[in-house]
Length: 237
Image 1 (cartoon, rainbow, N blue to C red):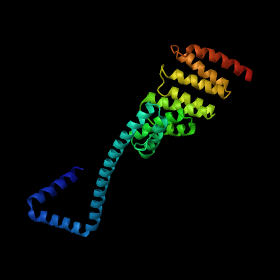
Image 2: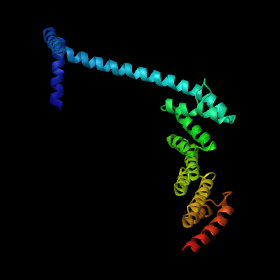
Image 3: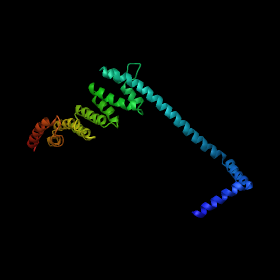
Image 4: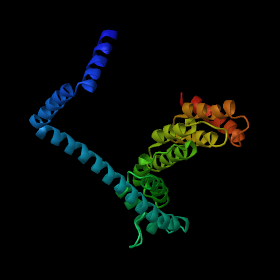
């Protein structure tokens, strides 16, 4: 390794101190460029295309994001005013949550539009569509993501998919579990399990509240529901 370093150092000194050697090296470089001109031009063109494409994509995404945010502002206004049809489908001038989620899917606003669309569709009784939008939503906010999981459970329950709903509620409860919201989701899971005639799973869900969330507001109800589910489970055997 040391010999190779010394050799390279010697070659460098020769190029610096000997103009003829430097001219010869440049000549070889010039020949290489001439012989490979088309290849090099292709490489440079490809690099330039990548840079331009990246710049255009960034500008496109920035423009899309701004457009989506503008549309979201009006759709959210309609949502808060309980004008759900306009919130979902727009007013002729501004897009609604459904279009925003579809057309701006790669933006934060488009992602949030899926959440709002899911909630609005639940309220209007379109449960399968609500489920689809809520499943498209992703958030780094633990509480908001858990809420989305629970809403998916609501949509499934309304479709008669009781076991899937119960499992979804438990997913919500276990997503960054906490003493404020997890007991609520577990109670909903227990009720969904009961609707599915799975009283053993329901009793286990209620028991989780009794054991793990002793300060929860749902504690007393959990105890009563647990006793009922255990009795029903025993009768089913």
